Image 1 (cartoon, helix red, strand yellow):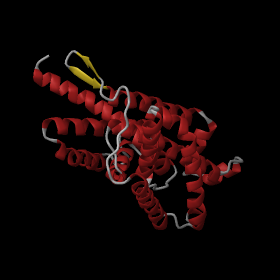
Image 2 (cartoon, one colour; image 1 turned 90 degrees about the vertical axis):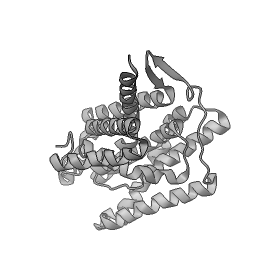
Image 3 (cartoon, one colour; image 1 turned 180 degrees about the vertical axis):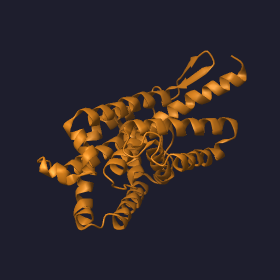
Image 4 (spheres, helix red, strand yellow; image 1 turned 180 degrees about the horizontal axis):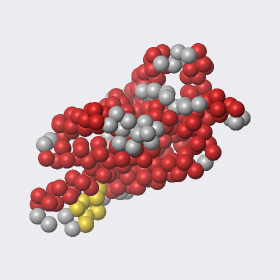
Length: 291
């Protein structure tokens, strides 16, 4: 394999691995924004919270960050349920969820960031794992384990969520709650309870994605703002409320960023990614797999 071909092939590998990470970060937004119509702009803040919890357990006890995030995901679920209950009582119940609800989540975003700064400071932190510095090589292809391990766990999480939402009564209720809550009430289902649990599920995925983030790169409290546009871009690009679409959109953005960074420089990657998003919306406003 010549050098140009090897560079091209490695860009594909890196883009797919990066796309898997983006899918884990964005799948919660696909649930809250795409299915529940709750614009949770604070989603990256919960990803950062998951990163710092995983970092603390790794730094003090030597535990693997991803394993910690999976074990502690029920705590994020409870946190998400409580947050939605506050949002519902203060905004949604009064029909004020559009602008004031958005301000509420902005407040959560900045409060979380300030709390992390007060506890951890502004220095970059990164976890230590046995596989972080390991790279598996297949001919001229490089597979860095700090990307491969999060990619594999991300695929399990995203595919598991898709199967759960498409093959269970609760999943079908989540898909229906934003379309016709009255019909759900006639079936004896409380749409508020469905939305509460679905939103809690979205926050639980953010906690797991946070562990992926701190395995892949160093983090500091303000870094979450960099991912606000990305997670919503993936959600919209793939198609609102489509888990498979979120996965496809994440791969598209991951490959676009990888090729741009490899051949033109990393500074161009965000521009190309969002240019691709705008082009998709221009020719297919529903997204790649949107209904």
